[in-house]
Amino acid sequence: MTGCKLFSSPNDDTLSSLQQYWVNNKFLKLYILIEPRANYAPLAFWSDYVESDRIWIIRDPQDHTSTDSECLQLLSLSENELDLLNSSVVQSGDPDNGYSICGWLFSSKNGEDIQQHLINMLVLKYQGEAYQFRYYDRRVMGRLIHILNDFQLSKLLGVINSWQFLNHYRHLTIIEHQPEMVIGENPIKLTRFQWQRLSTIEWFNRSVSAYHSLFPHPLSIQQEQILDEALEKSEQYNITNGADIVTLGQFSLIYGRQLLANPLIQENIKKSIIDNIPLIDLFAQESDEFWQSIIPQENS
Image (cartoon, rainbow, N blue to C red; front, side):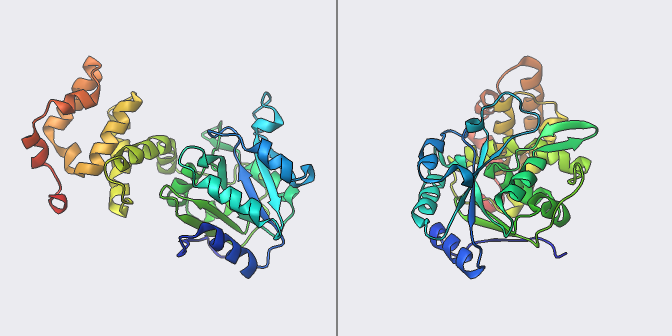
């Protein structure tokens, strides 16, 4: 089996990229994965146009209370339903409601096979404990492609030939592999380091959003590494306040590795924890000269 291929579409037009991929690879159907509880529930719209036998419910095996309409939904489209595909693309690009469109899936398998695989992947076990695995959330998938190795990513895709989604910058990201039936429980076995990175995905994304409110350009690979290090450091300091974790992440992206290496910053972090003072308030007390002194040379 070959490994996964990961690339971004060179075309800024998501709709035409999906159409071209669909036609070039001769798939009979395109599947859309929808999360009804992500800001906006689109099922009322989709069920008017997609028959019930083309909608599959993806229910977490640990969830015994949600209604079918609240669970993940897998829909199939045929080539003559480009207007519905376009509707999904438009919705996916919505900054407020776009996360309800998890992605576009291509597979030669039928909906039942894909449904069963997606359900099997919803539970992730680590050190004997079972956890809900939100791999389908594109904010999570955007990090997973950098955390999982090729073998693990192939297990995650399973019977799906290609998983495509809009990343944090609303660029189409494409994952491809040779599909396979995944048999057995917990096929994605994480190392301790991978688990640590997985557990900080929410704070990674929140830190990036805070950073982008000031600097909208994409992160470099080095910046992603610096943010991972900052989040690891927040765990070592036992910072439990979410706002403080995001502050540390955002400032690390701005000021680089020298932020956490600075003795005054280290004292501020300890004071924030001991005295229960928001970290941002302590940072605000430092002079402009101080912050100017630790700006990375390439940014000054």
